[in-house]
Image (cartoon, rainbow, N blue to C red; front, side):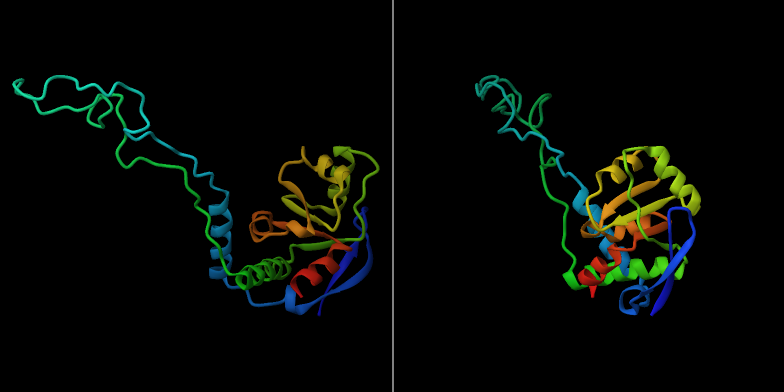
Amino acid sequence: MAAVDVLNSAGEKVSEIQLPDEIFSIPVKTSVLHDVVRSQLASRREGTAASKTRGMVKGSTRKLFRQKGTGNARAGSIKSPLRKGGGIIFGPSPRSYAYKVPKKVRKLALKMALSSKWEDKNLFVIDDLKLDEIKTKALASVLGALSLDDLLIVSDVQDTNLELSSRNIPDVKVIKTAGLNVYDILKYRNLLLVESSIQNIKGRLG
């Protein structure tokens, strides 16, 4: 098992924890990570672009002029796509861009993302990270003691004080273990795990 130091809020080592090799020490395949990240980003696309066909455009259904004798082509409606203000032919319509990656592949990619942080020595563990009040300065001082920035913090419980205190710190995000995902892990350079969250990660990916 991979051993990692457990730090306190002052950046001092207080203990050591063993990380399971089947989650934090597996070979990383960029193709698997790429597929899962593309799936996540595609699912976030709104797909709300829309245009009106001739059946949706408001306008009179009266013929513009008589059919014969004018020398012009027959015109049936002012809503024709050939006329200004008419409908659009083959225009965009609301759709979903989402596509699913197999559950086993998503689980494997999550393990690979965690393993990549361990390999790059960008994975850190803190014994506890509870704030008495919503205060950005208090969290910033803790991160300063740990010398961490561009950071994803993973907590095992919903911590409102921690989440709201992190909002005004650039490139810092707090998520629960249940929301842990490949995109966020790879987006931020450093990963900080609250010690109690490791057991939840084992339960989810073990």
